[in-house]
Amino acid sequence: VKSIVDWRDFYFRTYTFVGKLVGRYYDSEGNPTKYLKGVEAKAARGAQLMEKQKNEEAKLPSCNSRWSQVEGSEVWCDDGYPRLVQRPTEIALTGKMSKRCACFKEEDLGQSDLEVYEGCDYFAKTCRL
Image (cartoon, rainbow, N blue to C red; front, side, top):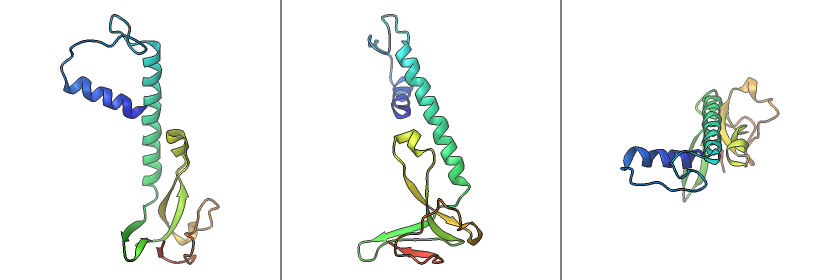
């Protein structure tokens, strides 16, 4: 929803107004309907959740990663150990739960929500996937 509102705002800023589309979102006077106000409220909530997720993820450094056709994928941490961790606000944003790779200090590895990459040693700083 936020992306759609951003798209609409882009067109308002970029193009010359030539008419109005009467229907679900605008009345015959060009005023927003209750449906549009609802969409805008959802978009604002989405923006808040995205900002919250960005702030939460900034607290934990992301893993380094690379991929090659010959060697496949690899993740590593310059300082800490790579772990998969859930993105808590992702379900509110997309309806799906996703994970990301973050680097954790040794004293934080006991957290129950951290996942060691399959086939990777518990104390490995680099994991081939």
